[in-house]
Length: 240
Image (tube, rainbow, N blue to C red; front, side):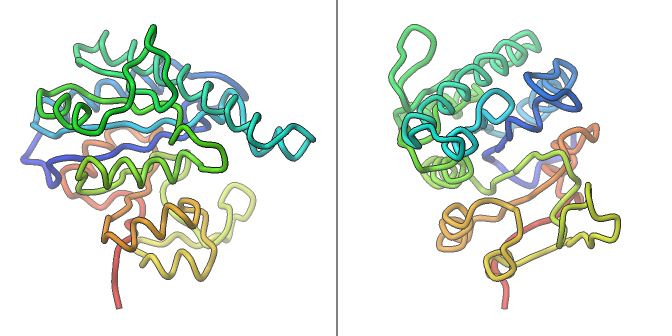
């Protein structure tokens, strides 16, 4: 791999991206490919942290809409992210990548507690850190967690892995005439209410000039290509 464009990145994985074409759970092929790309990036000297969602197992917002207490539903969703984090850890370590899972909800049997300085030290030692359980608080999405953790660890960018190849003006899965954007500003995203990340996450990124790269995780090599500085998906950053 050529010299990477970024030294430290936060990779945001949605639960939906992990399940591939299945309607539920985890597609092992997707995580295997993820593990190989992460290993390639780590071997090139990139420090990587991962925030993973839980929508492939449980979605708190959806459960709340059906009558469940919102805070309770969100806590269940946080536990789903821990399950995904442990699965990713298993695949990464089988690929020869040392990892640490750090949970915002204490569960010392399976994960370390989230401590910012410890997370940074793990990354400096070449370990991939997987952040689980969101922020540990209800009403905050894993998008917001990704922006928060990226800023806390001093990441150069957020790489958001999805099931589509960038940001469109409408859903390309239902609208064949949807238009894809190569580049957007944070204000473009907020004004047009584009489905990049939630508004809290985008605002955090905007206030701290943190770029967001949105790309398709199911396309082979996309993580490595983005780290090399190739045009992949859509980039969101500041602009006039």
